[in-house]
Length: 318
Image (tube, rainbow, N blue to C red):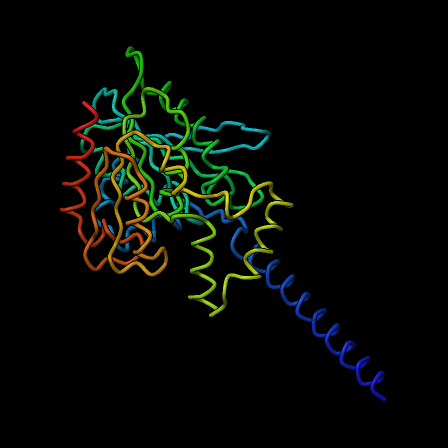
């Protein structure tokens, strides 16, 4: 009788373990697919969204279209066709603003930032990251492997705009996942023409960001779903959530960086800004946009944002 009871307990326990394992595996696979599925947002969709919060950009974009000033370029990197747009400065210039869009967006979603730089006399270069916009790709890489593509893109941008100069002078400016991409890039050996970085509401690491989203959206702890999803990502795509760490890259970055974050950001939470700033060796600067939600600092504080960007870049780009 006792043996039969013990056997039933073990059977029940094993069944429960199998059910839990299936739930964890299914949940992890769902997370991986939900978070990293490609998004090819069109330029028209992006512009419609952009104009809702930045209507002043429309006449400028229309004028660029009228004179065919927005150009497309394609490059093949590791067998994948990647797209970028570029816009020459109003007058011949060696200054370049390299602008990196956010999660599930495309290059056009950075035109409100481009508006600032273009009016400061900069050439603009705006890539569609892997699996975004018009670029091919089978999954979103959260800025980590994107840093390798972007390093090739910055050299292409330099060659396109250097003219008779030996090189350009370039600022790399990203928002959200684009900011994470910029930070990941900043920790690599830098070409001499990259002079400074601006990261607007980037996350400390992919693990930290997904942990926040699991809790925020589903009320779930990171373990074990996030750990299993990270291992799945490694097996399927060759990288994991822990290694994809902008804050670790920032520790190796010695070029000037401006950190921007909204104080009411609950998507990439505000608390992430300070550790990033603390990890970054000098020179560095931080601007906390009062009351701004995720990626809203420019929309809410256009004058202050423009002034801070202008002063920061003018210090390092002449």
